[in-house]
Image: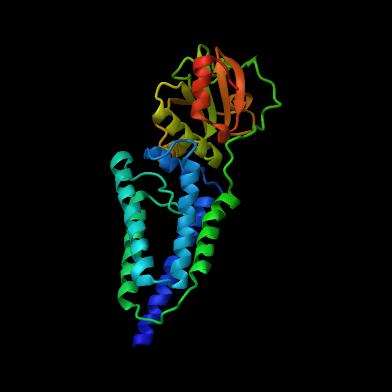
Amino acid sequence: MKVLKTLIAVLLSVLLGLIFLYSGYTKLDPVIETFEFTFIDIGVANWYTAPVIARLLIGFEFFLGALLILNYNLRKFTLPLTVSLLLFFIVYLIVQIITSGNNGNCGCFGEHLRMTPLQAILKNIVMIVLAAVVYFLYNGWKIDYNKLFLSLIGVTVCLVPFIVNPIDYTYTSNNQDEKVNYPLELNLLFEPADSSKVEVPKVELRKGKHVVAFLSLTCSHCRIAAKKFRLIKKNNPELPIYFVLNGDKSNYKAFIEDTKADNIPNSFCLGKSFVQLASAHLPRIYYLDNGIVVKKLDYFELNQYAIENWVHTGNPN
């Protein structure tokens, strides 16, 4: 009976370890930006420290997963650490529900397995119950791991996120060779030939400075850009950001639930006019100064401080 209990405990411990490994992997691949945004959103990091914190936490998940699979010092160290991390996630998710509602993807498994915050809380409670079962069932063999070996594992797995997805604060644009300092055909928006396909923007984009993003409702990169813009606007509500959206309007609710970017004014532009303004490369983001395109950039180049500098100094670079 004792052997059976120990075997069940070992298998459950390995299962928990695999869940943590999968959780870390899904946050890291294919994009880590959405996980980085979490720490900016709750106010514990800025645009420079968030990438470091995100990778360290992913590395910690990898390390904890490895400890659970190795059954290292389960009762005294690994299981209490596991429960503590899960309780931390639960508290964060409760705060998220209170502040933003039970909407969108919590990011627990990145974009691979989408879960609402409430679903993620239930998942974490189940994992805590499994950890408790392991704690009370495990009376198994004691395995002495070399501390140097464990330290090497810890350092290695914590470095993995930095190696697989290295931090790069100096981005180069795919659009740098394209022309700038030309007038955007904004009359396509403000004097539409077909008002059923083009909504007149809620903001006068032909005068003053504006950061205008052309986004598709179903484009994954557009959604990442929208999430980043939401945080930029949240941190500095005075920044003149505007979305021109394309796609079936039935997808608008899902877009807002996922990105939570309802703090940014937007309007729809469908069909040929959208392609003329944005081309096929999405998301398309422009710095507009009195209707003149002074800079084009990709979503990963978005930088709150750079936008603020342009708005205040007029220097787009």
